[in-house]
Amino acid sequence: MFGLANQGQTDAKNVFASGAGYIPVRDMSAISTALNGQCAGAFSAIDAFGSINTFAGDGTKLYKLSAGTFSDVSKSGGYSVGTVERWKFVQFGQRVIATEITDPVQYYDMGSSTLFADLTGSPPKARHIARIRDFVVLANTANSPSEVYWSGFNDSTNWTKGTAQCDSQTLQDGGWIQGIVGGDVGYVFQDNIITRMTYVGPPLYFQFDVLETNRGVAAPGSLVKVGASVFFLDHDGFYQKDGDNQSVSIGNQMVDQWFAAHLQPNTLEEVTSGFDPQNKLVFWSFVSTDATDVTKPDTILAYNWYNKQWSYAKLAHELIYPALSEAWTLEGIGLVYSTIESVPISFDSRAWTGGAAYMGIFNSSHQLCSLAGSNLAATMTTADVEPSKGRRSIITNLRPLCDTSAATITCQSRERFADSEALTSSAAMQSNGDVPLLSSGRFHRLQIDIPAGTTWTFANGLDIDAEDDGEL
Image 1: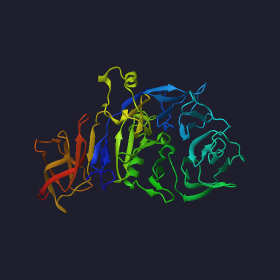
Image 2 (image 1 turned 60 degrees about the horizontal axis):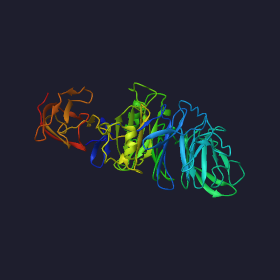
Image 3 (image 1 turned 90 degrees about the vertical axis):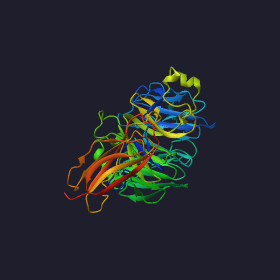
Image 4 (image 1 turned 60 degrees about the vertical axis):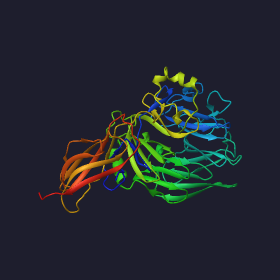
């Protein structure tokens, strides 16, 4: 019965879609010390010994996380990141390479570096970066927003064209490059063209083939790769692209329209993305029309790619990204939390174990968090239902299919879709699981509310007791 993309579904707030129906969204719980300023990008890498290395950047510094503490690992003098720019990272062997358009490309060698430094070879400044086969690839460079520039073969320090297969290609159509996805084959996403970048060896090095026209990325931070799939926001809604196949709309028009209506104008640069493979969820963070601070996101839109259901959560934050958890020690926990009682996360949470994939989120205090706090207040509202087809009906009782007794239900009824709903008072659950209430009309819209802090694990619908009612 529930699901933001279901026909007529009106609300699915502070819940995520799952195989069990809906699961609660938890509040943010800090798992790090704070950056100096608002987070402008983050990245998790795995070194040769299997250890997780997490990096983050703000407007002036780059940081490395160790046992819950972010330490400044910036080059001398720091950086000057533009207000709408983002740090982008890639791993190339033991090396983590970071870029944003204002400063020289940076590198950090895991296991030997203590600070980031300018990447040797004089690569161009760039907004986007990826690894395609044995090359580091920069895109949307200071030379041209449509340029793709790749390093020498298996050499991230060689940026001299004509040597070791280093070269560049400026794409002539399609607008700015908004992102690039790496792997054995690369995919370049522009404003309105998607191009495949395939290694063919000398003398061409890479072949560029246009796969789709009039399809591209509207928000650079919306591009997220999950396995072989790429998810992104185009100007007309959300899409999924699998390899060379044509992109498929996943917004089902209603979600696309909902997003367009709730997006704060001129804030597409604030969109970021992440995913949770355990729950098969992709996330997009954005600034909504009811945000109190239009410089920071306050809403996370979630898509379950398995059951194709949508929902959203309201959380004031700075940025989300695909994260890998570090392994914590008790000493590290003690550096962040002064007492055991102040630790907000259960000690058996996967937030403390290394290598678990999760959606990293930075709160408004510039701290890295996981969604492991107490459950947020949840609201799930159905489509208009018509128990007696073509006739009026009276609802007498409801049974929410969820594992909490704290849920309350409100019913809104009307005779025609042109009419306003008649709101009944909320009713609480009795000891037998019933929620008795009376509401008469032809169409009924039902809302389940679960208070903040309530312990529950699933909600997947409602049983309705209704009977024919008399004429008006």
